[in-house]
Length: 357
Image: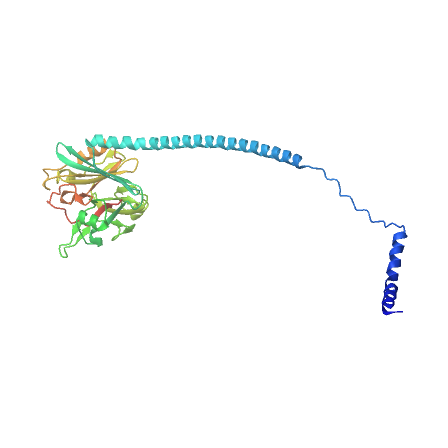
């Protein structure tokens, strides 16, 4: 056997098993059962239903929003109407509240025969200055409405017991808008000092004790609740009951409860006429200071105390007291001297009433 035949035989022997297996597979009949695949669950198509439901909800929300907006607009209209009505009521109430004051101011102006020449209005105070003429004298009226405890105070001359200065200097030193002289004084010939007369109260304290009223001397001041107080006091306890914040002393009392008080004989004639400074209060607790001009202290010019009593009653003043007069009468406003001091210049005084914006 040649080599080629040998190779063929070897090859047939190698592939014979494979050929047999292929023939077996071709002639055999059998089946293979494959597992059945699970069918997907049937899911209905609902996009159209969902869209319809969502649209209905949106329509309902729109309707609700319309109702809500309508309700809000309704309540807003009611609020606007109510706010407008309340504002109108406030305006009416404010006007009604101011009307008595308007009538009151017009009454004062008509009685004084003139208009307001100067005025100041702030959270602390309302001031109105009038100038008026009577047949025998020229006068000035300062109407004061104290709104707070800071509106008015009394000061000592140069802030010292025994010190003295003009009302203008005191007003400038304290930056006050206006000032009026206060009580009387006594001079010490040895020291040259000028002391407040009798009982004097400063910042709620007695400057040098309490002195029982003698010789018709009258205490004139303001209480801690901004009311004018005054009168004769024989006991300190009686004055303490009025809670004085500050005050000074002079003579006499002019009006009590709207009625004239007897004027001591000495003050009817010595002097008969003079420059004067008086203070009074109205039923609404506003104050009025009257200052009159006079050429000197000889009794031939200025006003009598009886004339000022009549003037005060005509204005509707309730209580009134005479402050130091003559050359002591001083009225300053906005850094200027308003009256015409009989000395030709302002007198140095130990006490001053000052008013603040």
